[in-house]
Amino acid sequence: MSRQHFTKNDFSIMQAEGLENRMTQIRDDIQPVFSKLAEPLAEDLAADTGEELFVHIAKHARRSVHPPESTWFGIAPDKRGYKKHPHFQVGLFDDHLFVWLTHMYEVPDKADIGKMYLDRLSQLTSLPDDYKISPDHTKPDAFFIHENKDKVIHTLERVRDIKKAELLIGRQFDAETAASWNDDETYDYIYSTFKELLPLYQLSLQTV
Image (cartoon, rainbow, N blue to C red; front, side, top):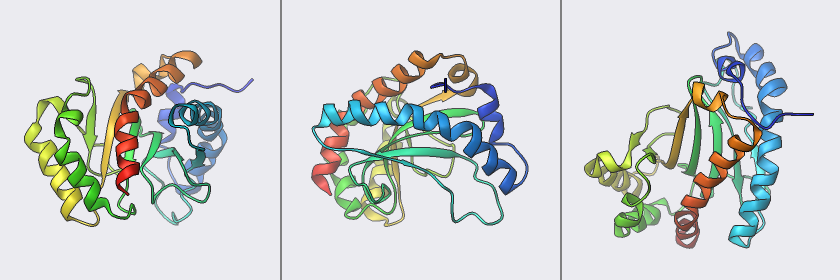
C-alpha cells in the first residue's frame, strides 16, 4: 500500500547528484506520495470552495542541466494548468516541507491582488504566528508574518508594482518534523493549513 507521508529519504533526494538521477528518484519516490495526498486534498478543498479543483504535479520539463532544488504539486481550478491561478501548493526542499497559497508571477492582474492584500492587511496579519510569506517560489527563504509588518507591506507593494513578483502565504515544516508524521498527521497538517488560508484564497480568486 502506498504511503501518504514523507520520509527522511524523500528530503535527501533533493540533494541527489545529477538531473536525471534526481528526477528519477523524484518520480519513483516522491511523486507517488504527492498523488496519494493530492487527490483527497483536492476533493476536500473542492467541497469547501464549491468549485472543481484539479491536481498538477510539477514535471520540471524545462530542466536540461541543473536538477530542481524543490519539487511540488499544485491544486487549482483549471484542468489545463495552475501557474496562472492562485492555487494551493505542497512541496519539498531538502530541509523542509512547504504548504502555500501561491500566487506565481504568471498570474494576470497580480497588481490587483497586491492591492487587495494591502487593503485587507489585518486579515493577513491575523493569521497564526507560525504562518509565513515567501516572495519567490524557487527559493527556500520565507519570513514570519507576525514578526515584520513592514516587510509584509514591502512584499505586497512589490506584488502590486512589479510584474515578476510572487506571493506565497502559508507554513514551512522542517524536514525532521515532517518526516516524523504518519499518513493521517501529514494530511491533517497540510489540510488544516489550507483551511486557514481559504478566506484569502477566495479573495484572490475574486480579484483575478
